[in-house]
Image (cartoon, rainbow, N blue to C red):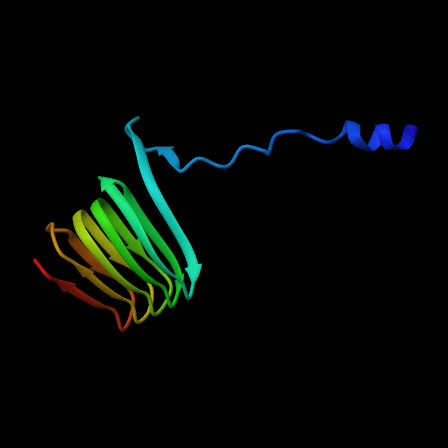
Length: 120
């Protein structure tokens, strides 16, 4: 019985806190970034009104609603459709296909075999 009490003493009733997706950037403002990391998934995401989006992984099919401030894509063979990108689109991966329907982002394609379509 004593052993059982000792074992239960170390148990917590609450789960540990999850890491926050809000980080402070260089000038003191709070940035809100969505980090998507998966393989072979189909998902819908929402940048709402100005979140940034970082995508890593391979063979994902993503539909992104809302207005993204910045989008960074790594990995390979991702198919991503984005409603709007305001500032930057950076691609560092291979064979990704990114389509955006609004905005005028600065595009930096550092990868290979990527296709970028502006469907405004």
